[in-house]
Image 1 (cartoon, one colour):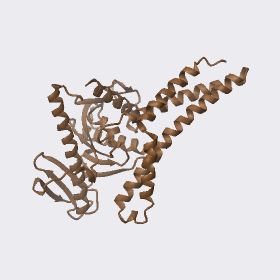
Image 2 (image 1 turned 90 degrees about the vertical axis):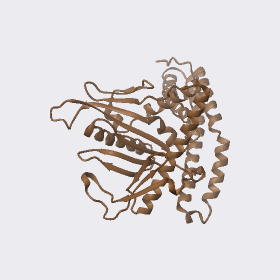
Image 3 (image 1 turned 90 degrees about the horizontal axis):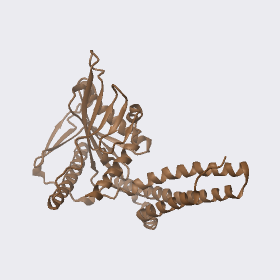
Image 4 (image 1 turned 180 degrees about the horizontal axis):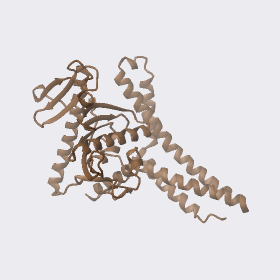
Length: 374
């Protein structure tokens, strides 16, 4: 059986795409960054400041992985070309075997190149940052609270699949089931740029497990994604603009999990932004975590105000994102569909188990296209 593929043309397409990706990722700059970070990581006093040490080692690991990913892709294209040449030099069954292997590898490289290309689209000011994700139950009562918990698990499972560390900062449990809200960090480079396309209103349609008459219920949950603040951002908040309340942490059903007033609720008076933290062990730690998330939200708010001003000056007042961005339908049919990109999956169980890369990649490409159109 002869594999009917124009390999020279296909390989040239791969090379062109790879060349564009290399131009954006800049391997030489990555090597220079790795050399600098390696020098910092070798400093004998590095771990005297654990936060600084973790930042350096994390950035170094990411840069090394990024460079290896780009270099490996170039090697795979070279190996594919060699495999095709072997197939063309052979006759009969041996030739077919080589060319069939080449066809399979061609398809794999196409997919992996597409994944690599998506990363190059994350060029926003804060896209390289780690992310702080907050999920809040919306309309729909206990079903909405349950939906919020399903979304939390979906994102944590997605992060786990990719090997991204996460840390739950605050959890507010609903009385009957599920969550009123939850805030967690995804501690990986580009987590913000990647997950920011998930921000918006999510909608669930299903037969409610909490309705004894088995009626169909529609519920909503809001997802907020902000970039994690860094020391270089200089978001100064005057003390007189912050109101801090302390209270006791609690678990599901009001069960006390802390006998001291260690939980912190921080309110930014000028904007009304409220941040609660209760998952750290001490009030000091919860206060620091709350301030960090508050600074992150103010950073994003400042950026949004700048963008709004630019759009106003340009005479562009149309919204980029709709309120309802994705529907998860479990009844009367099974479908998860993004209403912006039209991307859809027919297996909601897999989606809720963290298989959301297709939605994220489609969202990143959709956003980039809208930025170019604007």
